[in-house]
Image (cartoon, rainbow, N blue to C red; front, side, top):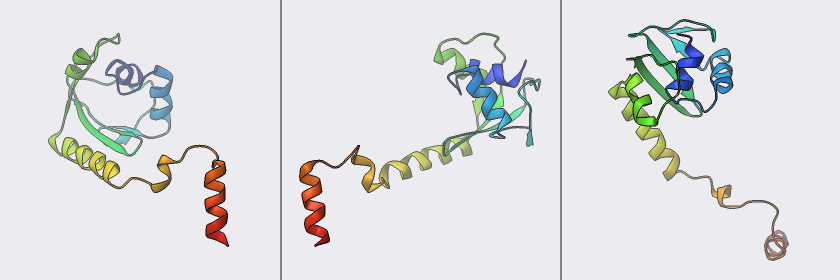
Length: 121
């Protein structure tokens, strides 16, 4: 089975074209090597998948030609315990160390502009 189809069926990516772009961009490695989207994968292959800041290390446990519900998709792979703990730590770190400007959206309001002007003078 092609790796891009498997990534889509296992619900790592929302569309098959996003899965193809990730494989072409080198964010997916099969058995430690870069792969092309048409690379055939088998049960037992080890994959390293980078999605945003997160890294998944999984072993292929099953193959599926169609995308199914999430509980079925989770049966297609087995994630290593190191990967699970690393992902949990990365998610915790990201939530704890939020960017102070993340709450601000769009342009400053009239009140914000006045406060900025007072601060600068």
